[in-house]
Amino acid sequence: MHKKLHLTLLPVVAALALTVANPTRAADGEAIMKKARCVACHAVDQKRVGPAYKDVAAKYKGDTKAPGHLFDKVRAGGSGNWGQVPMMPHPVDKISDEDLKAVIHWILSLD
Ligand code: HEC
Image (tube, rainbow, N blue to C red; front, side, top):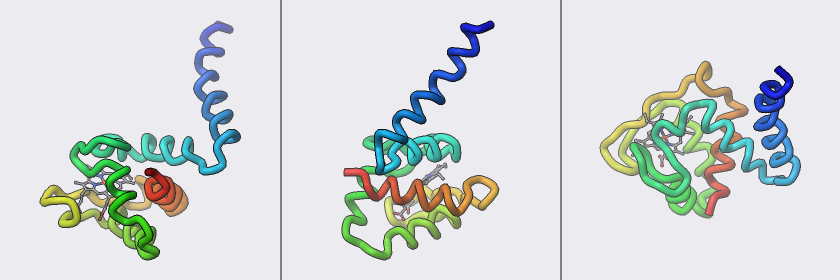
């Protein structure tokens, strides 16, 4: 009983520790990406169905319009920037404005 409780809490404690230790909130970005199921199609440094997030960061490096553009793109879905395969739309019930902003900020900060 006690042992089981410990095992359940461990990842939470680890995530909290990471958040505190890392001011760029890398743990948040990854957690949101898992929660919103972006991981079904994206990985940080490997192309899957969608582009690797490091490639996205490289493509938009220095582009001040990128955060807004990518916000709209993930919300509405679409194709054409990386190939013919479309990304599905992600309405507010899948990912909140706040989470979407945070995850895009995190993606663009990768290098
Ligand atoms: C069903 C698969 C799928 C899922 C789920 C998915 N994506 Fe994508 N994503 C794609 C594809 C395919 C592209 C390439 C679209 C293109 O060519 O313009 C893409 C492109 C992107 C881009 C780059 C867009 C551009 O115009 O350059 C970002 C940023 C992105 N995805 C973020 C996310 C986030 C954040 C989530 C989770 C909320 C997510 N994706 C979930 C398939 C997916």
